[in-house]
Image 1 (cartoon, helix red, strand yellow):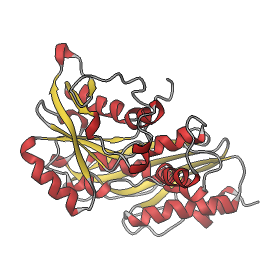
Image 2 (cartoon, rainbow, N blue to C red; image 1 turned 90 degrees about the vertical axis):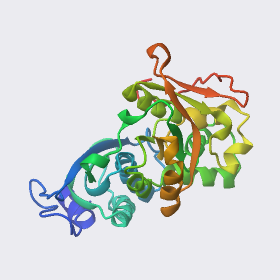
Image 3 (cartoon, rainbow, N blue to C red; image 1 turned 180 degrees about the vertical axis):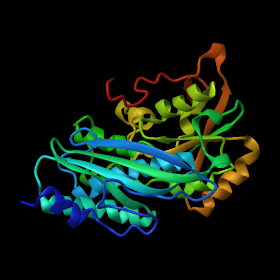
Image 4 (tube, rainbow, N blue to C red; image 1 turned 180 degrees about the horizontal axis):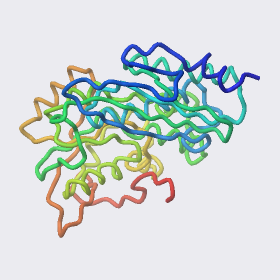
Length: 322
């Protein structure tokens, strides 16, 4: 059985072209680009909670980095450096090799240097910290939404949460359907290119990790506004649409989480600019609603049907302690 240091040397020591000093010392040394500010985020993935224990270890490595890249996308930041902390029940070299392969393939795709971390024994757990760069005046934040703004979302919503529902026996899918939605759950695509393309175009942004209603709600709370979202305008896959009359599918769409798409707001005058930015990075975007003044100071998200009538949203988002 390999030691901690053998695992690190074999699987987590890679070239770091953007770094002054990488893995192998007590700390890494990085040098930010002149004129840029650093964006820093961290996410933890717990086995059996954030991913199923039978998941492909390569997908676990991919997802551990992808969810952090998604945070960079939401800030309009270009990812540069990452650290990886892992707790392992046992030193399974084959499992760790696959995990490293999934992590590093995505890291190389986005030009991210793995510059350090920690490895220890314990319940399966991965924690990634990521650092990116963004021009100070072009940061996308949650607190910039204004009444009258359009609300946009990238890609499609709900498939990953539908996969969780199927795995937990809350809905039955055909094997081909399950495979398709599991791809969305295990191999999320972070919208980094879209995030940087929206600099100077979007007023606010967030990644949809805990569910559309919950995450858009964070924009509303930070910006002191409210939002109206049209249910019929929400982008969904053909697969999810087949099940959309079922409450479990509606919950997946509005509050399931794990989509890692971008939700953002922009002035109506920027519609053409939004569409050009999305087209340039080949990412579909959909205008799903509008920002309004918060009635009586209530910064809420209202989902309406085709007649403009409010719908009851029971599951508004994922909560670790909910």
